Image 1: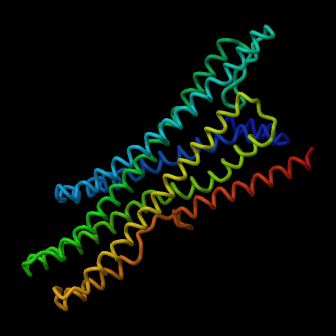
Image 2: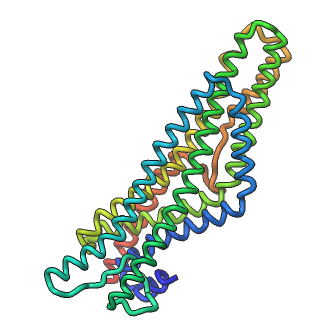
Length: 340
């Protein structure tokens, strides 16, 4: 709220508004994520249990797919965490550092705040400045850990579902190699049931994250616009540029986690149809099983998608957000030129 009030008080100064609203939007996104997780906590717990349940039935060789996916997910989330963490460190250190340097040069402490906002207490007092700095630190890292936890959980869901889709692809191949007809039939029916469970779990994941994705991608375009405008305006202090670049990088990584995950799930769910088509023409399959496999292949050709209600979450969405942000930057510059 203090940042919104500050923005309203400086509506004629676009640089000040963009400076205040970029972190405000990230806080809004994070609060929305946390509320949705609390609201869907039972469904999320059930989905974790379902993924664990199907994963425990994999053989030792098949588990290599899950290990590989979880290692990939861990590396991605670690990189994301340190990027966001360092963004918070720069946000907190830069104002104090600039104020201290000015004190050494001019003999006067500037009391530059971390977050542009309208505060209820006087800034130009040491104790008040420390209290505001601590409040800003708590707010920033509350947003950081809230956002990273929800985004990392999304990545965990995606990579474990993808790992299970890869296990399913392997099972379709090994089913063809089974010599005993009854065992082969049982194996293929297990694969069909396995496939249906994965589709159901993907739909559950979509229900959980759909509202989160809608709000996040709608606000991220504006957030990137505000950050890009500050970097390109020339009005920003040099000491603030590393923070702004890292902030934009962190937002970009956040977007990539969702877009890459959605695209990855689509691709691997579609690949199931390719593995079925490789085995369906084999002479070992009786007519009734071929018909069943045809139905399964037709369903697999429709990929499991994550959506934001009005759009699909894939790599095209990632490009759309950056293009939209660029359009907003152009609009802001034209408004700024007219007002000046």
